[in-house]
Amino acid sequence: MAAPATATQSPRDRGGGARLTADATSSGAGNRGPAPPTAASPGGPNATSSGAGSRGPAPPIAASPGGPGATTTVAQQSSRRAFYQEASRKLVPRPNLRSGFDQEICLLFLPALVAGMLEPLQQSAESVLVGKLGVSQLGAMGLGTVLFQFAVGFFLALIIATTPRVAAHADNKRLASRATAQGMWIALLTGAALQAVVYAKAPAVVAHLSGADTGVAALAVLYLRARSWGLPAALVMMVAIGAGRGVKDMNVQLLGSLAYLVALVAADSFLLFGPPAMGIEGAGYGASFAQWAGAATVCWLLARKQIFDWRDMVALPAPSDARPYAAMTGNLAVNNLSALLPTLVATSVATGLGVSHLGAHTILRQLMGFWLQLFLAFNSVAHSLIATNLSRQREERAAEVLVRICQLAVAVSIPVAVALFAARGALPDLFTGDLLVRREVAEVLPLLLVLMPLDALGLVLEGGLLGASDTGYLGARTFASCCVSLAVLVAASYTHGSLLAVWVGMKAINVTALALDLGKYLVLGSREAEAQAPAPPRRPPK
Image (cartoon, rainbow, N blue to C red; front, side):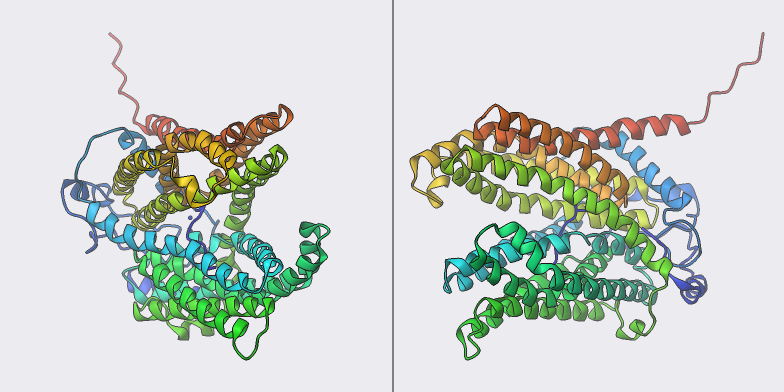
């Protein structure tokens, strides 16, 4: 698996050390005043009227390396509040057919979409190769892959925290390279510790999850231990993805995922069916080799863009450099666990309903996984553009970009939902000919298609939260949404409800999260704007 693309994916800090502070001061990066529009900035009146230029010189921001202080500074909090205020004014339905931001969004969206589509292709390619060894090996690979992804998912902060750090120095390659190198060191050290834990605890964790099937458990341990050697490379790829987003370049993620796929097929083919014939363990080593090939590719791409210099790796990051990553890791861990729990409970409830319900549930999850990649690409674009604009304190422009991405995502979701609804009778045939399973899929699918525009809007708004580094709110709102979802799922379980009731419970987390996010942007943003508005002058007494 290549490094995850998103976050929930979602993103600010200081950099580190007196040496970097001095460089920032001497280069003018620490206090540059209003940032000029970049070459990639779309033209038009929106771009002209937005940004920090109308508010005078920008104060030093939290993402700028150097200087002691809290992880989230007063300047960063002020910028985040200003972004929400601008969004509360602009986040209303407006029928814009064209926008000056469309070209920039499209240039980022297309590679992000292709990179997202490569992830299920990577899993399918490995499944096809391992499946030739036998059903037990295929099941062991599936279990090991889930545990590997679960371990990596705890460190999405490497993407989220790196993006604004590099974005703050997009115009200064030397400082951008040092920020990237600090993230690389943190990824390597964290990855090495994580690999040791996974290797040591693999037998106990696999035994707990695999139940009484000791044969599959033994194979899964072999696979997971062999694959664990790629964990440091997986975290390095996450830092590289964040650095790429910081300079608005999604090709880093795309080409890294492509290199992973090619190396995976080549390595697995050789280790499984070539002279080594290592079996399931060879598949794990092949995935680790592919992970390092992907990491080498993204590092080479960053070096070509001059935002990563190997010579900057000679200095270890200071503890203050790791603090923002550590703070975000806790929030994002709560977010990811809260998002995962309803899916696990729903699968358990669907299993209790019967084998046909479980089969339909699996098909629906696979179908939804494909179209969600479309909206996760919009999520990645929102994360990149919001983070880069806020790093220059262009809050108004960040809000305008967010609104436009929301409009595009919802506009794309409607014809996709209509097309899938028209093909709803043929979709289950791609997976099974069982009439009961097909009937269950046909009953639930309309609900998912009706909610598709809400999923699109929710993922874009989440990308905006990631771009604003508001991971504390993100974790709290996902936990609250998880509680609502679990309540519906428990009710469905105790009342022996249908598969439709199970999916209502699963989607409750998305609908609740969207409602909370809209409240965050619209209600709280407008209240803060009113609170900060100057009071009207008092009339003198008559």
